[in-house]
Length: 296
Image (cartoon, rainbow, N blue to C red):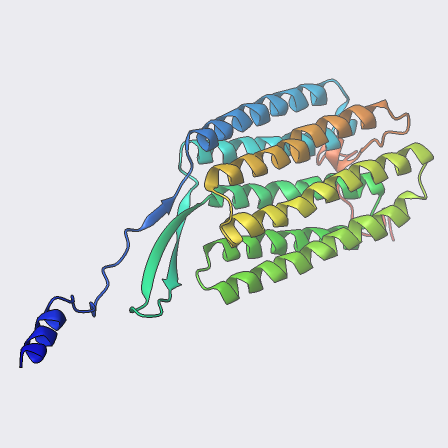
């Protein structure tokens, strides 16, 4: 009898296994001081670069300003985007619920809210087509190839945006795969079609295009890698994500722009655009369809 009573006492001293496990406090993955300061620094860089590009445009005749205007627009849109991110207006949150399985206890769930800078995707959807247009015009690509490259580029950016806000892992990486396929189309247009067409130009232009297009494609290849370890798998914090993209953006926009304009302006065979670009809808710049001969 004493042994039975001892067993009951021992059993009563063991706490029961809980049937409900309290939920974890939500985790917020947000930018810190480093990230916020980086956004302001890049905004200033983009703003000053834009002013410089517009000033360079006014130093040449309007017929030769196409590359200057396109390049200035790139950094102008980027400056607006970085200002929006710096003042926290171009930011949203992606809510992610992580299931944590336990062997002897009920499963628990961790809710994570990670900042997503949607203004960055708006920036890329405007600036990367303009940047592609710079490269395509430099190479001398035809209109059909330019259209394919720009549409593929926009698809790449939009599918990346959808992936950033997707909660489920499967669809997220599905969007990511679509973005990578679209990027391969862009690579094909520049690396194969662009390189083939530019060989018909002078040697200096061909060499310059190969260098600046290669530089751009290397940078653009790093972007999806950063996305994969930042928004994709969340292996780096938001500050590291901001700094990584900031370095790439400065190289891909202001550095690209100064390199393009200084080199292009130094070429003796710089293209000159007449007609509508320079003269508008007057007699010299009128857009004509069909034959001009009277009585035709």
